[in-house]
Length: 417
Image (cartoon, rainbow, N blue to C red; front, top):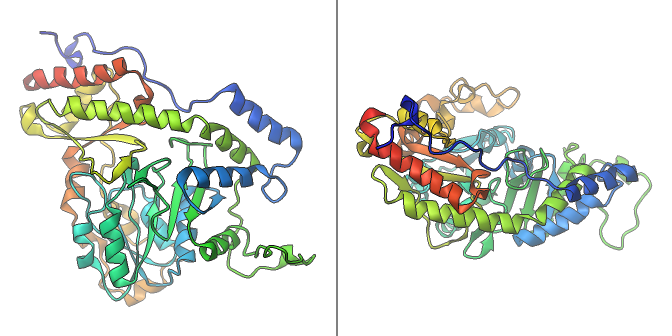
């Protein structure tokens, strides 16, 4: 029996997995054409508009708007949905910080509801208990690109007259019952930040099926200006008319060109990632102490921004997750523990360091994030959750076999881990 690499044995893998980002000469030429045109901003260029049309169609949305990043997209979506000072928005605690701070930046209150331990998505069974007279919206996060249980979430929203804003920042190409993520609730938001499966380094996108909501987010992202209605004359002073409290959140033409070029390869990448993720699900489920995430029937396409699985120390001689991660990394497999703590345990929430967005805190002496408890999230953070990156999932079947082989090797030698 081979020795663990952690103790000087030969590692399962020595060559690197696929690097990220992926780019081609076509991407370079697309950006170069914009630079050479001299039309670098979206108010004079046409490339961002072409990308908006292409990505909205790809995702299945009637309307789409490109913005500077996903965080801004979430805030603009919340404001467009009518969120006001002191309103409550239900969010999961196992997600990137922006999912909750965008609520605060909308002058509203994030209310954390625990995740389903089998999917790490917002648990719809727990939502209604968190609804109060102040609740105005639910913001499910399609975490790692796998669809939330939108049927149950939408039913709760209809019952309580709540808006649904989908955080689909991991959801490019993902499908729920063959409907594109971000196109199911009132608004959806995507990110194109550096680690994302579709990237321009930064950037974001807002989707909606509602033409009026589109006009609101368009105005908010363009300094509060209004777009002229089709056929209407445009006054010379229209560029200096500001009707809403908006800002400059416009995407650049260079970003639009890069994203439009990269969108062409995304379908094939999605198919590769999803096939590799399903192979890992099948094979890792055979190893004691490893539990892949549940894939529900309503998930008709998984964008696989991350590959998530769970660690049970009982299958590894009681050794903590940290030892498993160290052993796997020594074998050449870049496993991550993911988020180390729930959002409500972040200093910004414990200390309510909300900057200027504190007007509502004076009417909420009961608000104490130190008292929030979400057991499934806390277990995921502390001892259970494991991640593999989306770029690893672009590898070959042999690459995936190396992952499985390394996990099995570590499990066999768990007593020496």
